Length: 609
Image: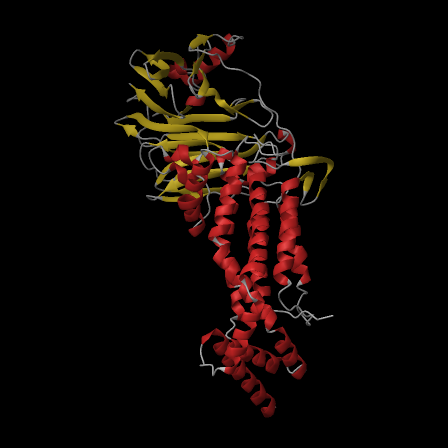
């Protein structure tokens, strides 16, 4: 049987691909998932004011009056009121205590259990302003009681939440809620408190959210749930995806509490200095029963108008969809992680427009397949050059065998003669590695694209009922470490395809057993196993792409092998190149020269000893 020899350059190429894939997937390893606990409370369907059950205890009222003295009216309500508003996108409920929303439901969306999707509910979100009086008392709006007023202004609702000391002395949140769209505005102001507020100390706005779990796999959802912020003109940064993290930043333009497929974004009317940002991972806390993924908090100084407070903000509550966010002012679409550098550029310039066009008239599964075909055709010249390089190396195998037998006791001389053979034959040993490196930007760009493609959410294809989630065909009832508690079919198909593809490519190359070097057969099995384990919990749309991509690559290589490449012509050309005088130069010549110099130095050192 013919012994297969080892090509170090192709081995380097495969190792690079394996290392990059491992690095991309290592940060978050999937574990078991548990169904979320979701509120079933429903808001009122039209603007109205209601008095909920229960009365404020009279003793508690007296205590508040005593504690706050002349400001006690801000903290003691005559009655507790709620205001419900409904728009095309939202169902909202404002509560009198705190003056902020008690509930925000996105009407057009549901979670994976077909339960209405609430972004604010069960006290998971809080917004308050804290300020200090001249006599040293600290007041916070979360403890104040606001009287609600609303009016229909045609294209929007205006909600005024006011806590008053008198006709011209009050603290107020004023909301403008458009009847269409996911963006609304809020203004916070005080009036008539010039002699009460301490202007020497800053007032602070604090906004926090415990992010609800909305996907089948809490771990997969957590990978794409993060606090992102825009700062310094057009720059974007984020807190750590894993574990807890906090920072203080300046020149903040917007703050996004991104929840994988849904985002809550705060946009101040001007850049803010010294903004505190905090993120905490809640997914592993047993006491919370995996209801939440992360907890986000931010705080910063509120602007003033004279001796009173007066500041404006916009809020976005809606899908983390690139097209939707791109249509808004600013650069909110950059809150979506499409990959850094060239990878993000490829997604924004090529894959987003291409997939958007294809999915406008094709089903989403078919659009993925068609886009895969287009990408593989575009990369076919690279596939062709890689395969030609493999054929050339196969043709040179007998000559390499002779060199190995002649210099089996001198590794340096053996390598020198091998490089000399490559140079004479006009073969670049790096050509087997370079095509793989060229494809890496496309590989990583698509790896970043599919998990954040909002358009794939709840889109079915074949046995996959949601292309943005895994395509489970069997629930195991137990958890396999690093794999999960279910079996996804698309990753299995992709692993089989990549196994045959890797076997075809490595089969063209010599693979000897050498001391200190792993057998190339390990690579044949390593890549499919990595695909099978790491992609079992990933979006089925991504696994579908890699399955079709590897299948098409195999077909392309078979077409090249049997209908395009003539092995005899390649062999004749290599033999003709051997007879031609080869001008020194190129990578092989430089490498050979370096090896000769190293050999001379080694021999000189031996003689001196």
